[in-house]
Length: 387
Image (cartoon, rainbow, N blue to C red; front, side, top):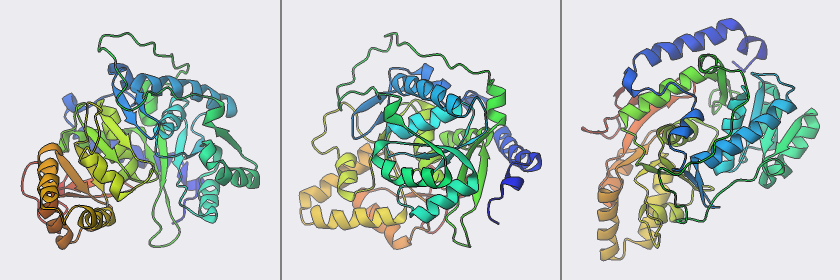
């Protein structure tokens, strides 16, 4: 079933989604939930580093303030309308978070896109979702401009409206009690209205036909996040290495929204590169005062990491010992998902790092549904128990 706007925006469909998410939300212990929009939580830890990317370190307050500024531009572009579709094509860095938060601050529904998709596929997503505006950066303007011209749509370059405030790696230094000015969000959307509203349209991989648009509410995303925070014991001390695409649940919810919902730190690589991942996992020549302790990937990423390991480290006995010692002692959790993990890959990764990969299972339509235990036996070929 291809996404049909007449069906997608019917109250019945939205009601079904809200009912699904609210039922899931009831099962989360109240003391584990954060009943506020993700961007409002930034005020709880304004000085904490939220995102580390190719530019440097971005604090929660700097991302929040940029988002507020951009949200006003979006509101003006959409003439004050809410629940319009806003397509996002941004790099894997802080600009994506700003685009996401700004869209939600202004009450819109985001449609995450990937620069790896061919033009015909991007056209399909934009047309099918009825996106009214596209948010992008100068890096991808050459992709977006022809699409905007073809559909006679607006596109906004983030660089034209905001300047990301960041510091070089390892140079961000704030005292916890330092006062940071947080801009005011000028809208009349209550938190209750926010959670009941639609948040995001994720397109499936299209393995059984044309990709299908899945509409998720903020209540649904909140239920997913709080569930995973409990299951995987997220805390604001965590530092996750993010090398996943930002157009699927895995990269958006599991690896990005969960840490930002917790006050943790997200190290965002521009794209997956095995050598870069090993550099961060092993903290090679890094003196930033923090180090990665979580990593999420798909099986093919772990295959590439093993290939790189065998090329760069395996011939040196001392490095073999070092890799296993660092990974087993410094990394608290490594997760595999989005495709079945072969038992041979499970065993080989354990041999190299000392980690039994935590497998989980989810779908675009519902988020994560099953997970192996954080503490307990993890069996190769199994995706665990219901969350």
